[in-house]
Image (cartoon, rainbow, N blue to C red; front, side):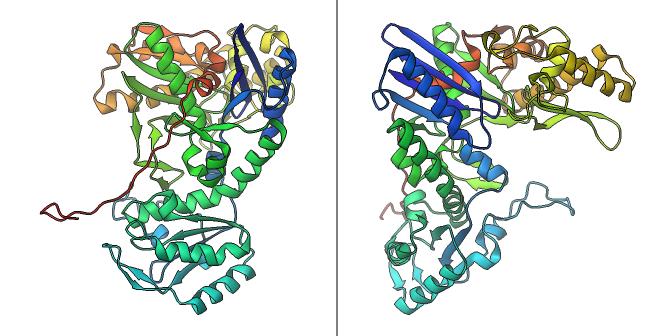
Amino acid sequence: MRIGVDIGGTFTDIIAFLKDGVLKYKLLSTPHDPALAVIEGVRRILAKRGVEIGQAHIVHGSTIAVNALLERKGARTALITTEGFEDIIEIGRQNRPSLYDFFVDKPPPLVPRELRFGIPERTTYRGEVERKIDENELRALLNKLRSEDIESIAISLLHSYANPENERRIKRFLGRLGVHISSSHEVLPEYREYERTSTTVANAYIAPIMKGYLARLEGELGEIQVMLSNGGIISSRSARRIPIYTVMSGPAGGVVSASFVTRASGFKRVITFDMGGTSTDVSLYDGEIKVGVENEIAGIPIRIPMVEIHTVGAGGGSIAYLDRGGALRVGPQSAGADPGPICYGRGDQITVTDANLILGRIPPGGLLGGDMPLDVERARRAVERFAREIGCSIEETCEGIIQIANATMEKAIRMISLERGYDSRGFALISFGGAGGLHACELAHLLSIPYVIVPQNPGLLSAFGMALADVTRDYSQTVLKNGGGEL
């Protein structure tokens, strides 16, 4: 049995492939403890076929890592770098996204100034160690870190990609602290100190969270594999060591499965449209999955191979509200799985799902084959109050919510197609995710896309991609040459 598992902000999707068929399961995510939904869902599927835990091959993708970065809820992390370069993650590079904006707010660094420590050492770009690390310096650093109650450490020294000797020595010495340590020569052995340091810091920042999460899953379900951001998979042991490579694992699974469906449908060029409960992910497939390394998440440069995906905060759970000027807005805030949309029975904020339900686009009998009933009247009463506030009818209000959500998603698709020189009229739109089918035709009309593909079980397609993926690892190493070609 091969099982693919995808955790989303609203639902956790599980699909199992057997010799004689396919088993599918979808249940509400458990944001307070994401592992709970995974463990419960996998156990139910195994029990249906009498399969013992440990006998199934489980591939898992989740949003745990990326959410820790977005919400700044990672570990208390220290940065060890070459003396004089403690502020590299804050200084960054000369290029600025808002060059003439005097009031732009830069996102705070993952490591505050008081937890960044410089150590006297120097390695040249040729890999020559000009200054070794003094053991007294290491001892003083160890005492400082002990007093700071550190949970994780990132080590990024100048030119360690050419010779990691000093980084290795620091890691061995600080290993007695018993916390996770990420070294830049292991995470990203490439030149460009800013990107290498930023990626190493991000890895250290999320590692303790991912370690605990994956260890719990392994304790309950046995050894598993984890989806990478580039569309491949690695063992959970490797994922615990370099979790930054899994940061976009969930959306990558959707693109992998969409490429499979595209080929099976006889199409060559598609735009993938994955609309879930919390967000919408779009990507362009032109005969191959596009992977890039110049990536940024929540203002943090992450230089690792990732499937080129653009994400916007528009999903079935996106919340409708009035801004300070009285204009109707939708998202990026989401009701998630708990409390969820009003029609789920617990939420109290109107969402895109509520609007679709009231307009008759969702059968009132419920979701998940009727296992999840929907409270239509509760949603209608809430929308009626909201409609009176903005001076529109219930139907006009719901239509407005959907049009605003569509505009956000249309802009995302334009960004990865028209703005990059691709004519959307030459593509098909492949729609998946739990809410994708409700909006795909309108988006195709707005963008003059001639075909829409809706695969079977579109709400489970990302989990399907997990089960399809191959074991993959990307390796990189900077090699410097002079004009004559000599090393």
